[in-house]
Length: 138
Image (cartoon, rainbow, N blue to C red; front, top):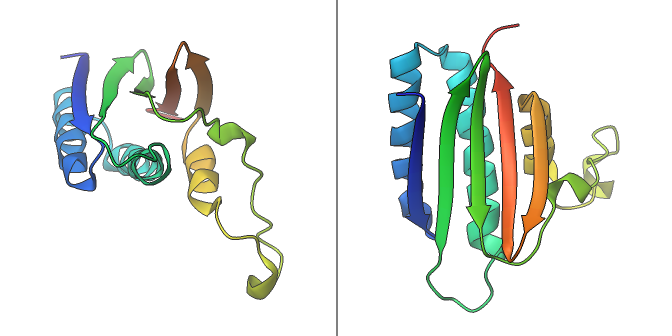
């Protein structure tokens, strides 16, 4: 098994299905626990942002998550038809500023950018496509 695709609804309780797919792919390829944990944190953050901010009408929508192992890389592609949002345009938080002076938000996306080897965003038609890549070995 080199890839796994899961389509979930825009509800947090659906995230467990993505974790199951990730765990299955990781077991099949003997991916190190640290790599899997990094990808899981990144997926949770991105999916939470989509569910919390991507849809404003309270409707039910599908989010597609494709996981693949390519060469020395674990890759996740997340697609949704929510509002256009490029997480790479969110400025990094000022981690040196006193807590009371820090801007609210953006910390989770900062973690995603730092945990992943590569992050890419495209708006394809009416869909957001975010690709997360994490090297399997140094």
